[in-house]
Amino acid sequence: MTVGRVAGYAAFGAALIYVLLKVAWIAGSSFGITDMSGLSRTDWVANNLSTAGLGIVGAVVALATVRPWGKRIPLWLIAVPMWVGAGLLAPFIILMPAAAIFEAAGWWSPPATAPDGSEPTLAPWTFAIVYGSFIVLGAGLTIAFPAYAWSRLRTAVRGTVGQIPPGATHPAQVPLAWTAAVLAIGLAVVRLSWAAGVTAGLRPGERDIWLRLGDIVTAAQVSCAAVGILVLVHRWGKDRPFALPLIATWLGAGGMVGTGFLSMPTILAGDRWAPTGQTFTSHATSTFLTCLAGAAISTVTLFLLVERAAAIHQRLVGAH
Image (tube, rainbow, N blue to C red; front, side, top):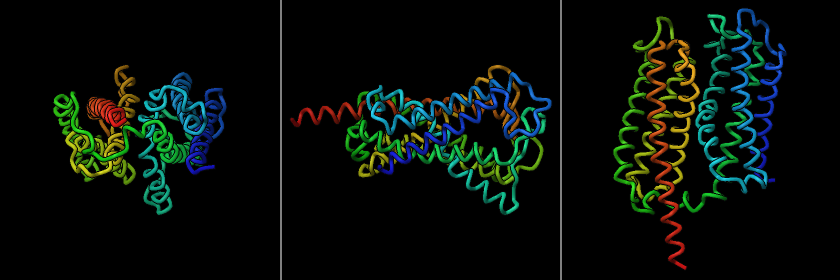
């Protein structure tokens, strides 16, 4: 069995464990929960239904990378959830090991519950199950998906950045890519300023090392999307492997769109919730702008890939 297949099955197992825990909670089990007083049962079930659904999608995608039927289904059915899922999971590969180090060193400890009672009090080991599943799923898909994608997309992704000249939509790609990239860099600057101690857009209070690291990782992720799309559109570094800026753009934009659209429903519903330390206004504004920039970068990338694949195919046909 190849490394890619082992990674795919490991990712499937991790997603399955996560889903089973969520199903148990939806069914009313108190497994791993020490206190649910003051928590709305309806909200609890709704939240777990949505996250269990994401886990099921992750399990199906992981299995599709290693089973024969995965190569027979339309590519977009795998590519779209993988694009968003990889972007959402990539930060956990850095954040979760860092959390373990911070906790072992006594620099930080995970909150057992939300200060307003909107979340249950969980046993510490549940964090290991939930976030451990994220790490294994993210790492597993990171290994398994490239092999799967190569078998179906090798024509479009191999070669160098400058191998194919700009296509018909290039005049539209340039302004859209630059607008989105500038917006993404602006969002990165805001997050880095929070990590450095700036308090604009934040609630009063100390911002611990965990939140500051999250700011840095988020800034790095959106910066990858910004730089990656400009490299692809302008063919900077023409001899550079095309896959490198594509992966940077994919992980960055996927995370931007995924994070944004997970938060937008609660914002549009009038829920005033915001991540720890952020004001609702800064959260809502940054979420909207993140969605906008991520969607624009993703759109440009899609057009660029389609044109590249068509041009390479035409060359191959012409050569024969």
